[in-house]
Length: 208
Length: 75
Image 1 (cartoon, rainbow over the protein chains, first blue to last red):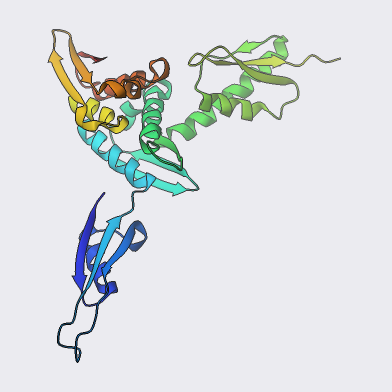
Image 2 (tube, rainbow over the protein chains, first blue to last red; image 1 turned 45 degrees about the vertical axis):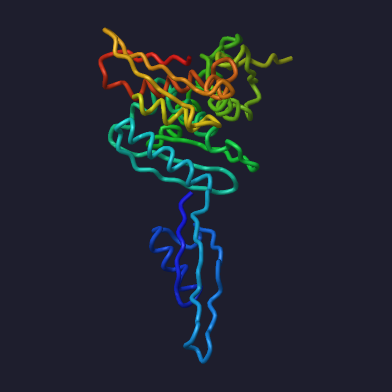
């Protein structure tokens, strides 16, 4: 964790100096007052300045950001990170020129990276926080594709009156499909098989 | 690539000082050997090798520009 100690005439002044040193905003730090300023005799003799310790808060967003930055540097992939943190959910979007390799086949690499990042961010933490990782809006596009696919296959299941089995998917992707089809009353969905080969089955409802 | 394995492993274990990574160049591949403290083995392997698989996947992405395969072994 990064921290600095600064001395100035007032506490506020010392804090501002420290913030300038660290290059962060006031909301991102914890301030400890080490010594209150005191006026000496007649305001001249023996006056003591204020001394503060300012430390950057060790937030999930900061841990995740630092980790990804050093990782992508080692991978030699220049990236731009957008990090949003709210209600213990961390949304990270990675943008850049050569970021396609970070997605991998069907998002396999992205899922792996997201899994490792979740482990790291929550290591030794009392409050757990969920991290969702995306590359250039890939997950949103994939979600739309999956929803279209789900509807198409649901129609097929109804028309043929037979089960339609999808290829294995991650829990996250299966959830998108279950959700997309939950309001249809002509078919129902369930999953079968063991992780990581668990897959969705779309089954027509028997009428009458 | 060696650095990638090192960053990932150090992020997962309790004893980052005990992480050591060794890379051996072979004819058709790079062999990366990862060593961690005995009590940290589970942290880099995971249930049914899930963490090890994720590490390998990320390293493979890091190595796409290389012509050779990359093998990560945990020893």
